[in-house]
Image 1 (cartoon, rainbow, N blue to C red):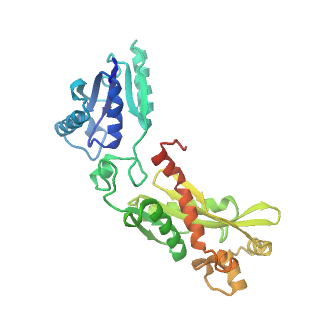
Image 2 (tube, rainbow, N blue to C red):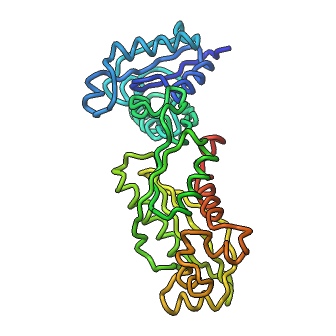
Image 3 (cartoon, rainbow, N blue to C red):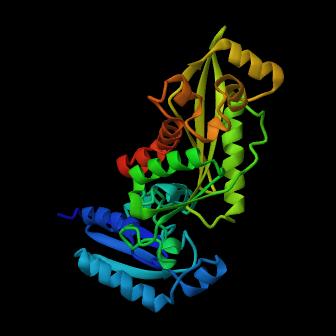
Length: 335
């Protein structure tokens, strides 16, 4: 049952998607609702794309309010700025998404300046599409997914490698996360801009550099780019572990994951460091297997075929997606 209070929400509402529905559901706790709907002039001034004319957005918003049994208690007003109405209207609360909470604080600052009581800020968790990214009207407009976030197109991934073993491991991980029919992966060799076989933190830099180069190559026309880099990590004197690092980039931020590691004979680690070589080259000399890094890897050789480098890559990609899975599926603030 609705409470005896008045709330405010605002937006452009090009589409009323799952994120907007969360805001509307929160409105059920209030007996009066004022909704600020941005004008066509506001949309043009802020270059909001895509969008529809005000009347079309208004009609769609009303349909959704009626569907959620909120229309009778809602008043919709045309607004020309983010603070329009909210900085002077008598109300009790403002409902926003987590990412627009700062805008609500600015509105409260303006209200304080105008001698009005502060609004209670109700921040609603973001809604995510099945590609693990925040639902956006732009992606709905371009047909990536519907208003509920259900995928209509495969998740596009650009990998910074042409190594078949790395690509196979990445593909396996992506299929576990998004399902086979929902992914499309493309690979191209990218420069890591680090040592042939990096040590410690340099490995993370190599993965990041490959991911950013892959994103640039795709011209941002992908959902994610991947960079994978194997390196030796010094755990103690005379103890080095070979670990694959994956960096996932979405044009805004990176997330990282590590694959399973195994101890490399110390004489091999010393040879790599002394001669600026890499594990594949040293293993070619030792195991007489050319391009072992593009096949079973050193892990496959040392384990007598019981394990494969592909598994290292797969686990690193899976782990790099953990923060994104936690945010999208567990509503957890990871960063």
